[in-house]
Length: 231
Image (cartoon, rainbow, N blue to C red; front, side):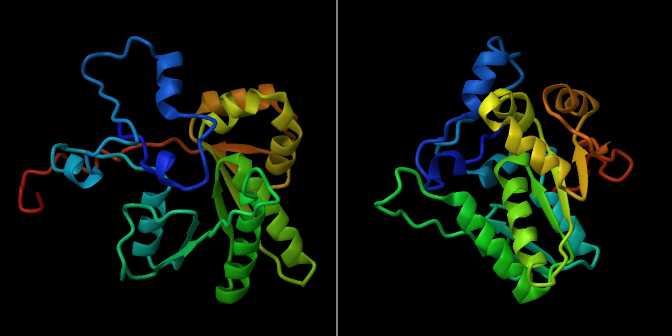
């Protein structure tokens, strides 16, 4: 399991929640065949790919598959996903540039993200926003949608719940009103497992439908490759 390097290299200060800490808390006795590579490890993700026979990546892979199917896909993030290559057909990257202001102890990332979503939506005419994690992305998407609506622009929101936004961050009562509001005001909501859907309904005041679309590998389509030509 390769923890994303952006956890320590995103430039927004120390992350309040670290994947390695989550593993230590919930899986203190990790099986021998599972290795966790921390975000500050010098091992390149590309080098790691050479050692594996199969890889599972969420979010970025979905966008690349949509691009390959002919859709125009715009990635909006504070750092460029490692799997994005310059020049890939139908794929565009927009950086959320967060400036440090002396007035604030913490950079207003969510506000800058909202402004970036509005700008990109108006510049390229987005059909919809697919945001991952309820907080801060769904809440920022709602603000962007409201701003655009005031200018006569309709932009639907699809929110995908991944886990920690519900089971860890979501259990903090101070986030509950915002997360519940963001979920309920998304045009469509998906969860990556039935248990995550159940947790969401348990912890939050959700009155909208949540569709379960599991993370998966299609074994009929992705067989173990016999050729080593791409290795």
